[in-house]
Image (cartoon, rainbow, N blue to C red):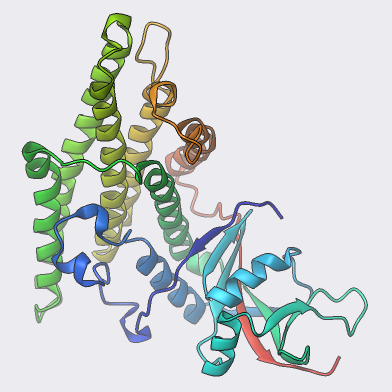
Length: 375
């Protein structure tokens, strides 16, 4: 297996809410805060809802020989109860019935995970107690009805992609803190906060039609905010390129840093907002519009990564790499971001363009813990 692992923290979501409830804003900061960057990423809860639905609605086939050869990946799933995606394989935890004492000892690393040694060549991992005694087997149950769950699988994949991009941008943005100007608040932040209020209000409405009406209204406000952000990314990128085209302006480094801060912030906001819009549109049953929102986002980010802006044909992302105030903790972060994201976005743009609903390459497994069997 490769070294890159996508880990999704699992929130506490009641199973009876997974199908009909719109669970986006979970914490007090999500519901009442004013700083978008302090809020949750809005992807995890949705991914977990879809994972629970996938687990409940699918036929499962017990897998004896694990296709996941890297025991460290199983460790991550079991110790942290996280969803993991790695090279076309998705692992979904199913530990609801696991006793609390085992959960606690796994978390504290008192219990460990190892390969079963009782049968030569058996790759089944097991849980060992502090004395090395085998107490639980780790099993995989492969989801076999992919056709019936295609939209759920696609929704999980899309949200994980949004989270991956956001996480990378958040790493870049971490040390850059600045005060957003009033017009940015008005155009970017206020519409989202207004939409949040409508989404929260929708929960108190007694009829489904009234709930959907408020969700549609909220979606419209986020759509407006996204349009403003996309335009600002384009305008800021062009202004940034003009500045770096004139060497005599280079002493004004603070101005370049401001442009770069705006671009980083705008990309983060857009990624969050797109994740929320897709959830709203899927909630009201408009999956085609959700895909169009994702496609538009892909094009905006792809232009940022590849569209020539200078006389030398350099795109905004390359200029960010050239002028970004790197230190030892974030060296070459924009170059790495571009290198990793360009082929990913190209692939996803093509898939959305073809709208090939049967093209699901991921293998998905439910990771369960069961009582040990004699081998």
